[in-house]
Image 1 (spheres, rainbow, N blue to C red):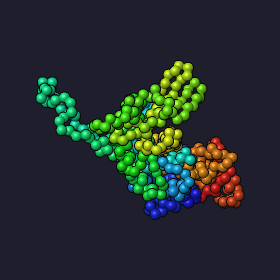
Image 2: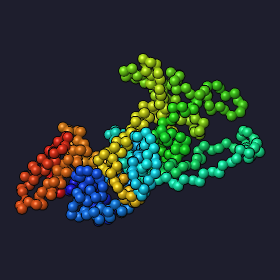
Image 3: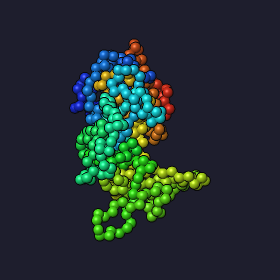
Image 4: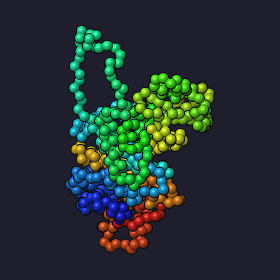
Length: 448
């Protein structure tokens, strides 16, 4: 546990001595344990100094997870020469019972249907050159109470007087499309984004916020622009886009801003950026500055048109950004990096307890979810520490095998009548840490 303590010394200004000591014990137990990551199971693997009541106290403590994730990243994972982006995404966990805080029905993209469970939204920091995502903050998505349904209006009362005249009301003014009303989801995302940017404090130069196609709308774009970032997202396949006008201005009235409607399957070759063929699929990349009637400003649109050379069937994807100077290849690369946050969710669920916790109250649920995402950052640092050029694929299973072996060695040394010599302990630690590992490395640290 010595390396865990040394890594966590940076938290001393942000956590009390008791909470920091409990934190180290919990993390070491999560690294070593087998089975589900619950409070009861963690207490079994902490033994002295980590009773079930102690674990309960830790989970009921208000912990500044956003600050801890950033401090850990800045101290151990930060590379000043890399390029950084921010990405956001939601994950849904199936949960049973009736008392868990925030329990509702959410759509699970993994299962392809609406399920009963919990939803969490995470904001992650992405290193472009390393192509990895590091969680910075996670919050639970809690749905408000259902609003009262509107009263029904009888068909008799629906006269021409109540309906009013067809068409635009007289004297109405154009709506300012930059002034939008945010729904509860966008308010929460904006709050989290501002919190992360305030935590970073200008240390990193962030230019873009990556979101999936669910957020490909004007309200999200205005929300992101209000935070000082550019949005990179995806439009609907049937989005009504318009090309720049080609007819010259006639000198009368307002100049036209909408040209012909954009047809993604018949694009002028002047907009083509690149062409690539792989097997029977030909992918053409086009970049066009288009307008959408629900967006106030032009959009930087990249169309990926795929054609099956055998059947001549075509499909397309529309990416867009509010940054008109961003080139097509960079936009495609940045948007593809958004998927790295899905690997964070996968590891948090598979190894660190995001799917396992049984807490029901608000604070413990928040701590359990954020602990699992924080462990993604810890495992990334440990993989850097213990991985070698001979074993570049040193992964999470190797880390857990290592710490489980060290835990067994610690407990064995306690019952021996006489402690062996240091070289014997090192040899035993090296052997135990390799049991169950996929990529074995002899770079062992003695049990702390």
